[in-house]
Image (cartoon, rainbow, N blue to C red; front, side, top):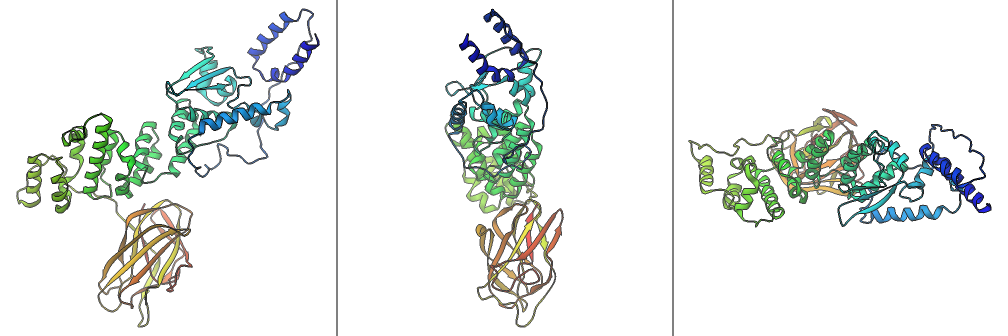
Length: 517
């Protein structure tokens, strides 16, 4: 009898946390096992409370954290946390160790303690068996609520989920139990799928924010394909902005070869694609080779043409420079003899043949110019260069892509300049180019372009620099502005410590920033 009482006292705290349905069953069994009878437990009062935590943790409503290093042991880490949780349960009053219900629920995350359901997650041969608690899951997801407490609920002790990756399922459970968001580049897409499947909207939004933050030319094509699958129009639009502005980088990325055929066609027919057509052609060939491997076909030109199908005619081959066509597309083996002959005639003949290929060049993107001076001037002893650096710092309130700078030229007749332009963020070089431009002696600005447009994030200062070599006397800007509104983008300017030739906010060189938005 003493052992029975001790056991009842030890389990009392756990009993108070159980759902009523479980309590009723437990109460009946207790009556059967205790012939002498015992006093009834007092009724349990449930109260909705506002949770506050003394420690600052990553909550669903917080701004999404900086991306963590990629880890290949996510599942193992969660399993270790499971062990740690169990190790903290050393007595029956473990609940008293935590001040909030959120912290106490966190102890239950990936923990066998009081688990009343198990999930077998992942594809056959790579599954993980994970514990769960019906009540907590039902509170966090309407799908789980219907699964466990709905009219068609099935009382299964083990549920198989083959279409979700274990690491992604655990990331979702961590959000449901702990109200913490833990994402990585490796798991974010799979976690988004899980959040969509089980209707956990705040986690899904956090996944989209993570993807938008980490979006670049290297992954824009893959994320475009995924955003269409997940029906995320905002993410889709952001992907298109990156692909349009940094088209050549996106098309040459490894991720481009992993997209599906439908996404390939949507990119190839894009009117605002800012790329040379020979780059588009070469990217399509790379995709076709990868598709042949996926379909276990040899990478012959016939098979490449076959897997491309009608997408081949979305490449605007007649708009290529003649040299690009003659040395590239015409000798690739991807065109029939008739197609090659007709395109050569289209280039040279007065009466052009009809082509299946689109013959109108893409419109591309129209560059915008932010002019930071209200006037310009020249004097007999200014502006001189001699290898010194002209530099200015700027920040924007919206994401843009800097394509180049507009620069002043000679104030005493026409002259040619050699310009080395650079763009840095906190000392890190993001883009540079060495090129020449011709100044006609007027006060106009002359564009100098980066090899590829550089993505600029909002609310961070960047440093634009140029070192000029040429005619020493040139025009220079005056009446500079610290803030310039250009379309929907606001630019802010401040002086740079890198400037050794006198350029600053009020006057000097680099009068224009050329950008896409």
